[in-house]
Amino acid sequence: MKTETQRTPILILGVGMTPVGEHWDRSLRELALEAITQARREAGGLKPDVLYVANMLSPTLSRQIHLGTLLADFAGLRGIEAVAVEAAGASGGLALRQAYLALLSGEVKVALVVGVEKVSEGLSAEVESALTTATDADYESVHGITETALAAMLMQRYLHEFEAPADALAGFPITAHANAVANPHAMFRRAITRETYQKAPLLSAPLNMFDAAPLADGAAALLLARADALPGSPPEPAVQVSGSGTSVSALALHDRPDPLAFQAAAEAISRALKAAGLKPEAIDLFELHDRFSIYAALALEAAGFAPRGQGWRMAQDGAISLQGKLPVCTMGGSKARGDTGGATGVYQAVEAVLQLRGLAGESQIPNARHALIQCLGGSGATAAAHVLSRFEAK
Image (tube, rainbow, N blue to C red; front, side):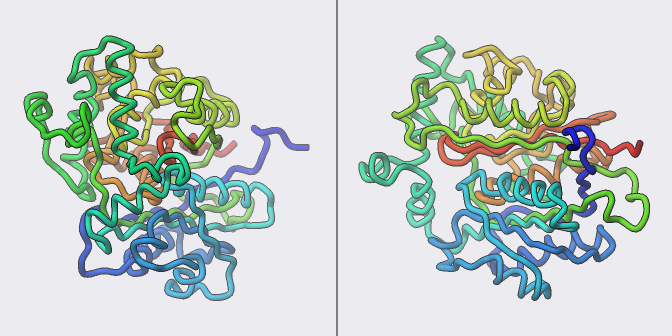
């Protein structure tokens, strides 16, 4: 039996993504097709054996399910296997996970992953209601609680328990906006200051407008293949999925022994790093899910990059900037690139691939060899983590 390090490398041969924003002139299927076309073109037109579609909100906002078949048909891929994957905001990471496992099994030689959301299909109240379906319907949303309110409660508890200042988390959106300036696909390409953060209106105290990522339309795609299925050597620089891990915790926030410990996030990252044979210090950049700034702090702590209650200091001290010890959200993250719901994990992977290829432009992390990506579903109830690495043929 092959060990983790002896397995056939799983390579990412093509990537594609649309700009994130309000795409009034394009439908969900058209956004997905744009990303798919880019990814397949990069991979030399390879036809996938299977399509995995990551989406969260289409059933409620677009009144459309059966996305696997819909998008395979629209992309001219009739006859292949196709399936939709849903895990709230972690859908993109779980879709990549399914593709990775299918390729490792040998049953699949080439796989296509696309994450897509069309949030502008709904009014603000409809979008908020749709997002709330990621909570526990019987014990959370039935009482009128929303994802934003849950994040606000976590933030309040964090600030109180660790005696952090009111603007302790400001460094996360400030960093995200600074990193998005050079990203042509980002929704908000403008830097903000601490004063801007401090003056922002509250959404749900103590969480303000800059603590929450804006929901937006967008699609991103990955074309993956087994290295032994290619007719020749992969194009350089190539990127491989060197580790993958997922986990879940209690769905309802009140059912967790310690709400400030993102246990699923910790377990998913531990499993991904173990599969890749790496220690945390080997990671050159971390694309975490900053749906809310409190999630970013808790994700850093769950991954072991910061002690409990000290994740906010990494942002305040510049440790997560492009020039810092651990660059985070290098192209703007969900906060400034825009949060594409179930497509988030695929956007993270595309951006990590660009970093590892050395094609991230002004956002480039010098000599990046290993990138960690992680997306979260609900209030951290589901986590999917992957380590992407520069591929070096033996």
